[in-house]
Structure formats: C-alpha cells, structure tokens
Image (cartoon, rainbow, N blue to C red; front, top):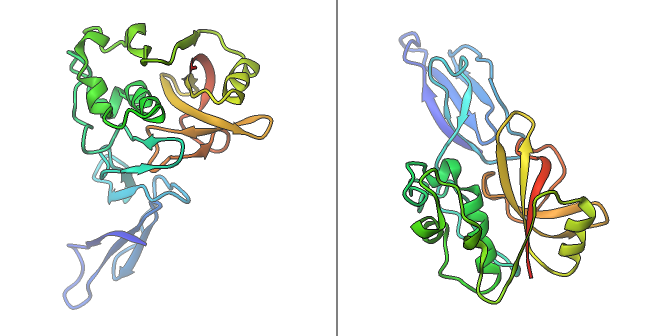
Length: 229
C-alpha cells in the first residue's frame, strides 16, 4: 500500500521518475529516479507517512507525530491513542506539555475510565482536569480515584502481583523504564497465557489488544503498576 508518491524534480526531460513510500517505511524508486537508502522500516505497521527531508537520512521515511482519529474499541472498552488528532495538541493541566508527547498516562487513565462505563471521559477530558496535575504535568494520585473503583498503587510490583490483579479481572496501568531512556505507560487489559499480557498501548498506532512481549520499541522493565478494583 502506497502512502505517498514524490516526483524527482531533477529527472531528465522526457524521463520522469520519483519514489513511492509504502506503509511500512520502504522507499521504492520508479522511472529514472535513483535508488535511495531507507533509514528506518516498521515491518507490519501502517505508520509511515512521508519521505524524510535533509537531515533525517537520505530518502528515509518518518513517522507522523499526530495521527488521524482512531475511534476503536472492543468488549473491554475504548482504545485511545495519545497522538490522536482530536486531542494531540491539548496541554496537560496547566503545563505547556502536549498530550501527543507526554500524555501516555493521561490516555491510559481515560481507557480505564471507559472500561468502567465512563464513555464521555477522553484523554482531552482527563488533560483538562487542572486539579489533577502539577504545573510540570505530573499527575496526582487523586486522579486515579475512579468512582466505585479503588486504585491500588504498587511502586515496585512483581510480575506475580501484576498477573494476580489481571487474573481478578482488574485493569492495570504499568509504568516502564525504557532501554533508551525515559518512561512510558501502557494499559494491561488481561493475561495472555501464563507469562504475557494483553495491552492497549497509547503510543503505537492502532495498538489495541496487542501482546506486551515482542519487538516493541516502547517496552521496558515495569517499575510501577496501578490496579483498579
């Protein structure tokens, strides 16, 4: 599937050419255009949206920061992506930080609300609660007080503890230390066998009900978990 076609402006007269970008990030020359090296490739993901400009790797593709709306859901609840155009630019609380870049926990909390039947709670609604955030965008523990569903915050959880919560049918928000630095939060929606989890990931495109393990660039050791009874 082609996501974009770019004409080569330096093509000789009478011999047009250019490049086709596929949905995985592959760059394919046609006509008189020279072959270009692809700087990154996302196999199996409809994620590439444009050819890289100078400085991003010759002919390389890039991922869009803001995505088209992803109005998905299943029997567990709604799926939300922090980069969804409907709220991507929304600042978190009174901070200057946009939801698309820093709103993984904001988006996870909205998904948990949806699981408990609060269909009107979106990432934008959570980010608008200025009483839930410090000026640096940090979320207060009070934000996890979903009516009728107590939050159990474990700041050093074991795999056994997380699995036990999921076995009870409780959604779990997991915070991870990423290998490359930084942190990321995902929503664990259930157990996949004895040693894996089903996940709604607020960053990766269309990442509803995907497995926790595998070749993901936003997985790491879990340092915090929040279960909701």
